[in-house]
Image (cartoon, rainbow, N blue to C red; front, side, top):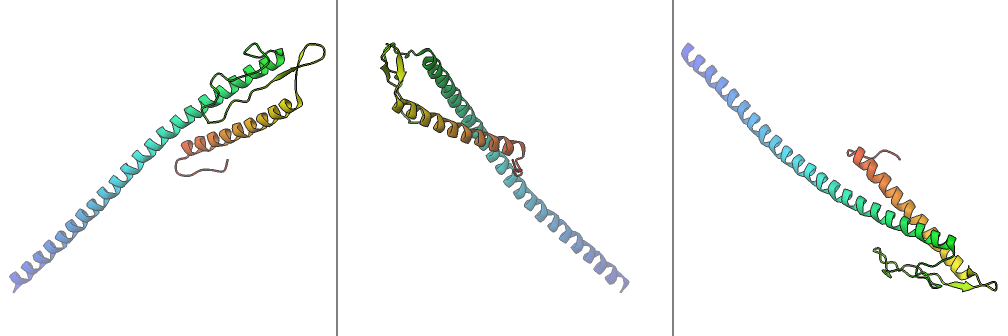
Length: 159
């Protein structure tokens, strides 16, 4: 009888160990799946970050292009000379990379022989400056949110 009890106790201990090993194996499989999902998520974030970095560099180049073009335009306005040598400012490309045509300005002759801007050109220039300011503000906001997201990938903080 004692031998039967001892065998039953050993059998119960073996069954307990077997259940523990099964639970550990199931937990290991679950952890492996979770780890695989995390690896996929991190690689997706890395790809997204690279794409955003490329977009950011593209936008920086566009802003630099617009700022350079604006400086040239302001320089020509200040000097009262057009880049083509005639009375008209004309873009060499005819269209910017964002799909908007370059504005051109006509200078009219004043009575004293100098060139002056017509009132319609001044209004057009003012509208273009406002649109450029809005566009730069939107780019700045986008850059700010990108930088915050890059610094705090777990969630954004109020900017």
